Image (cartoon, rainbow, N blue to C red; front, side, top):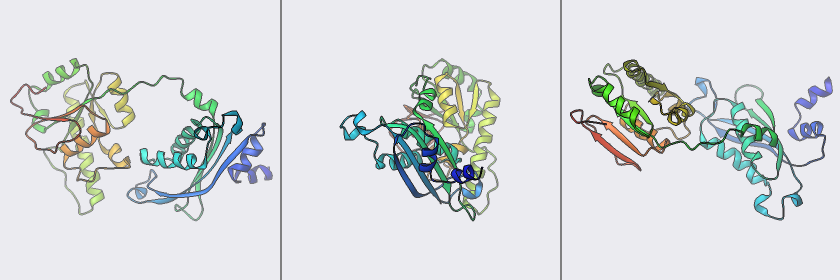
Length: 306
């Protein structure tokens, strides 16, 4: 038992050697430390902390994958897998980050199995972390569902006047008949929330106020689904649902969060449109906004808007 406990805290190289029935070749990365914003607790938001990676990859011998440098799993590809995943999104859990890094490494032709240990170095007197083991077989099991391209949605920003318009149901009827999926965005409610002098607190209050308005819109018609994550949005778009965007999670978890005040809700809708690679952004109301990489149409309430 003492030996098992000792082994549990050894570097993944020793863990790999103890658990392998076959003498695979291995490459390892030791004590690779980066500063990143990560964590589910409020005090971990808006600040970075040191995160340490120790990774071992069991690989096929080089001669079995051919004399092609592009098919050889180099140390750079391991560190690039870490860097890539850290730029895709902000992670709340080390477990999720570890799984994503392992999956990316195992996509390399030479990789067979990988041990990924990630530790937070600044959360206490010791290192707090997780370790996972994943194999190429695990990757194959997770990939049995065929990937489906996410369609390009239309983003429709509804002003408060549009939400309260007698034409709202007719507009939703038109959206339901569209071939392309729709994502609705809303602004702050007419009763603006009381703010503080704290920028991060005010940002959260305004995001929650926008979500309150989203739920008010959803209460007007059962076809409207309030959605807060990118995964849910992808599912809703693939299944021809009308989504109403609740922005808090995507904004707070983004690695490239909006640099402007979230109270500029038209700009916030434009930020979402870029994230979803939308084909156009329709602004239902009288607004001015900068031209982006997609078509923007500002529509008057007096017209047949949609």
